[in-house]
Image (tube, rainbow, N blue to C red; front, side, top):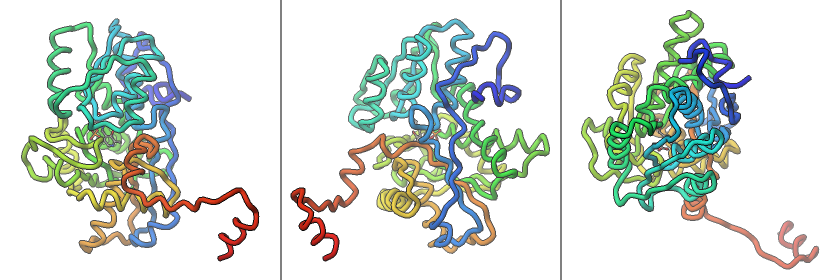
Length: 348
Ligand code: F0G
């Protein structure tokens, strides 16, 4: 069943809200086969949001935001993006016949994401600045031009859609995990997940998890309690210095008795390699900050025993082939198409 259909009762859907789908949601919750032993928790799961149609969790929120935009009569949508929001907006824009405009920070978006926006036919504006500056610009233009709908996560419909990720986890496990590990950039997703868990909790269908957020060390405004003017990290998706949903993220952390921590780039790279090589899951660097976070907390002596943990792997590893090229050690044996040569190589 379509995401909007399935969770209709929890979403801002009325008789005039168009229901459609590109196949978003219903993503796999994969049980760890190896990492959980190293971490020493009871159970560890990975929510593969990279399996969404445009390859990231943004599709859950975008389907709702675009549906509400159409309900309002908008013909144009706009967003600022570190890559995934632009890919998702452009995909739904194409599907629904809307003009999509995306503002991206020059040179700081993964090639897979940029290719998607180009292929889906978005109007792309690259700014000589960062995501936070791009977001300010699209906010201003959408406030002035009422016919252009802003589809960043400050649009509450995005958050409504994204809370379905929490519903799916509880629907599948039968309960909420003890802890949810989640990357934090503009802080919309941590806000959305917490909303989702609270809704189920209010209905007595679920307990509440602790929200454990992670920011990249040099892009960690919430951890450091100050705006970062020039955020930097190899995880370009979360290269954000002034998150729009900062306050809501603080609230989620506080209400859930959770915590937020910063992870350095080397550890993010390590997490990226570990999740792929130990679990067969290729996730993009920003997502792998959660895996790095597991090891980071383990090193600090955090007690994982008896706990069930879910890591939200927000985007697909295929989005950022340059990262793979730069950080993986490609050891590929080259040879002629000769049987003896192959045998010698394999048996040596
Ligand atoms: N993971 C990935 C893969 C992302 O693309 C983002 C955000 C996040 C995590 C953080 O989520 O912003 O809700 O805290 N990407 C945005 C974009 C900013 O433009 O695609 P958040």
